[in-house]
Amino acid sequence: MASYKQLAEYCLPAASVGAAAGLIAGGLAAFVGQPAGWAVVTGLGLGVPLMLFGSGYAALVALGKVPAGVFAPAAVYWVIAFPLALLVHSVVTAWVVTGSPGLPPEPWKFLAFRALVSMGFAIGFLWMQEQLGRFWWPHILDRNQYARRVVEQYTHLATALAARKAATGRRT
Image (tube, rainbow, N blue to C red):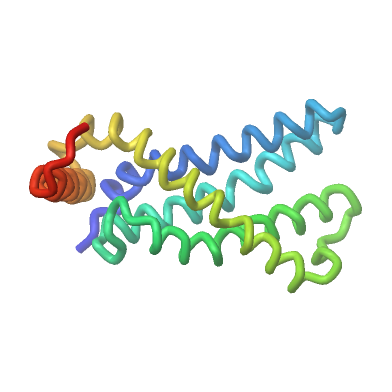
């Protein structure tokens, strides 16, 4: 049985990536002169879905459904999740600004374009999650089965890469 408290604790770095994206979006909205309320809506409208989707990806890694440190599964996940997060952001923003929720014009084109640019987000997400995780997961390693499992996966991956590098005689 999964410990939801441990899983949520393990997912904090992934959720932090979404929160940072929302904070940046809200900050940019304020910087370009949008009213404070709109900037907050922009930040929350983007940050909350990205936090939830990011935590979903981290949960897949923690539960062993996706290997840690591999880009292809992250790319596949975010090609779907990133456009959906931006669609939520668009609908929420339209709702606050116009008073009624609505899809963007040509929603399939909207989603397709965001799917194309999702690879950049997937790379950034994976990198940021791993950078934050390498500080957070060892901190909770003794009490969190998911952090322990993922740190062991990364350790095994690093050992295998070092062995392969030594076998080919490469330095650095």
